[in-house]
Length: 79
Image 1: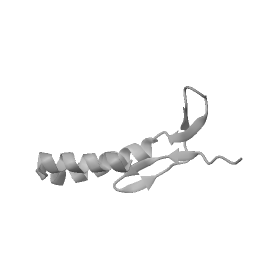
Image 2: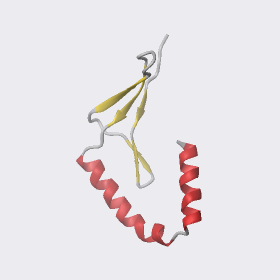
Image 3: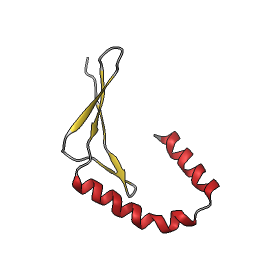
């Protein structure tokens, strides 16, 4: 039986980013079964995320709170 382990990366500026750096393992606490590896962001990913956030802020700031809430709720549903 082959089990595929999901690798969870980051989404930066709308793009999925997975680096070759260190990972954290997600385990089921009841069974100890491995479910996924989560990529730890390195300096490059952190800088890219900060830059993307700074660029997005002016438009996001002008977005009505109800629209922001709807977008975040939709995003939460997707992940």
